[in-house]
Length: 437
Length: 176
Image 1 (tube, each protein chain N blue to C red):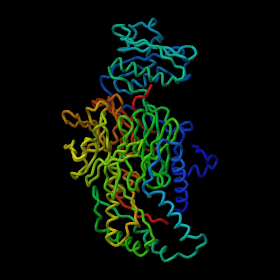
Image 2 (cartoon, rainbow over the protein chains, first blue to last red; image 1 turned 180 degrees about the vertical axis):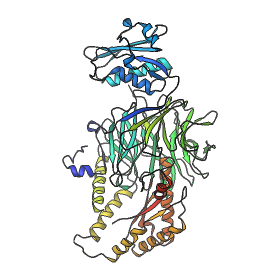
Image 3 (cartoon, chains in turn red, blue; image 1 turned 60 degrees about the vertical axis):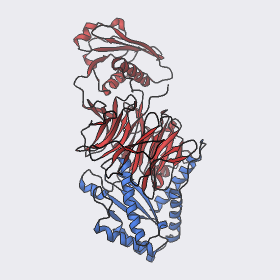
Image 4 (cartoon, chains in turn blue, green; image 1 turned 120 degrees about the vertical axis):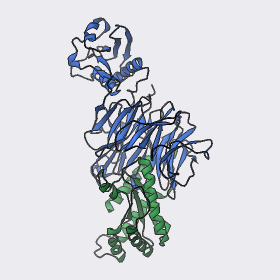
């Protein structure tokens, strides 16, 4: 990793406690995440994604493989193995539907990359009826094929499920390697399928709590560089970062308001943690909670009017809510289980994911209408839930008596999968919003 | 230790430099916490540990004796100082009262269970309990700073009670 001004001073560069790398120079993270489906859905829909035409075997990005990988990752589809494909049509006219009926595929994706790689055409068919469900030609110039493939996945997924795909999004997470005092903390941003990991910040001291800006262009996070906590907001495109809070005591749990103009955060005075809202353009700070307990981990409702947060004002950690216009009227939200913390609203605001203690620390999902809390995972140390922007999947961190890894569970709890790293600990996933196109 | 401080300073200046890049809004630098502490630390190094010094001062000897008594361990989900660690608090209070220029950073920590930012709160609560206990024994508030690492800096790696019991702690870290 290179830092302007210290280029060449390698020893110092290696020892420096934290370097916010410029995205242009961002170092590829060494360990890519690998996906293992730990508990698949029994009734995943069989689909065949035929290798695209115009692509040499083993050449550049294999568009069909990326699409099939995305669909598998969603948990709702079971892509057909390539070696089982009898024919390899690349357009609708070449399809013999009876072949695919025999292979028991319900849906079929065919397509091709045109000569210069300037566009990718694809079609989606219902195998039973032969009906064409989608036919699109996507300009590829200026985009790499992998992002075009994710876009195809998004379209196919939405056509078949009615839910917008979230395959063109990214995840941020923290990795930790090595033992003290040589421990290295890295803040990494990767594609939603774990590809293209890039280290955006690195430190010998802890990095925590990455939170996306609503435009997906910046991350807020906590860094303990210099042996005290501070909150930074870093633009991913340039690597430029701004220290937005470095007050005495704790600076933690940043969360962007839905319009991106404010940051909810946790500060402490004499050890008492409270939630504040910081106006980013003016630095105006408003105190929201005043209780003599731990109040932290604020999460915004989509309308930006209410914060859900963790508090132990009643003894154990529980989830509360406060209307920003009426900070005195704090309401308790959770009652079941002895520990409920780190709430996150679903994108549509109807459900609340949290860490709940139910035989282990697990991911729970509360329906805010019925107040029914459902435990979705089965680990002993599951934490940091984060919704995909389509609300269909929750990514979280899992530490089952071993190094931390990332895992996903569908919001209906029907399938689970794990993203593990070949080395080190992986934690604190944060799913990005949809990219602004 | 000195190297660490030099690096910390280097990093701080890097961090500040980064902050001074053209941005729409100035970063808030309300608290003297990190930068001032780092600077002070380096000053103490220069004053009390000149290169070539062959004998320890009385203060350095006293500090060396505290090395074995610089951690208070806590019970699960508790921020009460257990009986057996009151002596640790007293020993450190004695040192800080005797040497009013001495500075200590109280680092609160938790085990890995539960959510991370909430654990930052629990670690802070433990650090504050120790801070108040030191104040009760005459230590000046200005001699102490607190930081909470929550579960982020485990003393012992591991996922069982043996590790957890070593990780629920407050460390006394002296600035030299």
